Length: 198
Image (tube, rainbow, N blue to C red; front, top):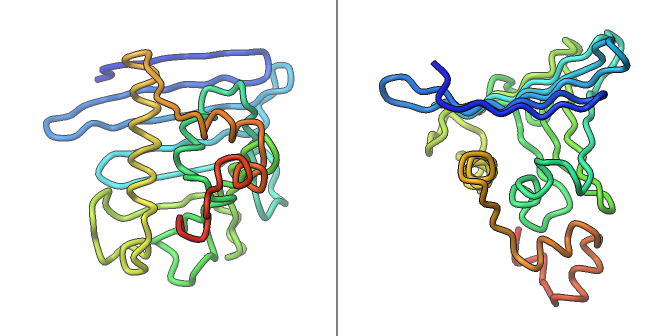
């Protein structure tokens, strides 16, 4: 049963955020569909339950990747900045695929725009990325490689939930500048050493 639902619709994009709860865990689901007139073009789903699950879907069968763009005015823009954590890009590798980066989700900031792109190099054209366990788990590539991606994902989903449920968005001055400045300019303004943030 849904505990919370929020819809934001325009002519070209239909955004949904929802929280459901069972006996022991809450599931957060972010969905957005893209349309041309009444025709559905593509969509993405980002989900946190006891695992992380991300999926892209489109109406074209001949694509090797599937990309979505977010400008400064998009509701997910600041949470995505939290997720990037001042990096130019973040690669989230699929735990259900043995080879590294054969199926992955890449979040990348280019100028003021953030891109979310699904890649499938397996030939299946299956834009799904699955991360085992939201907590530390050596079955997950993230934890085997000592990466901080799960922590970043929690920051992202917590920021989205806070924004919709409480109406409160926490941003730093750096993040507000990051919305309009490339990382090179951010480094000059705030004297950030990005090598220490890896």
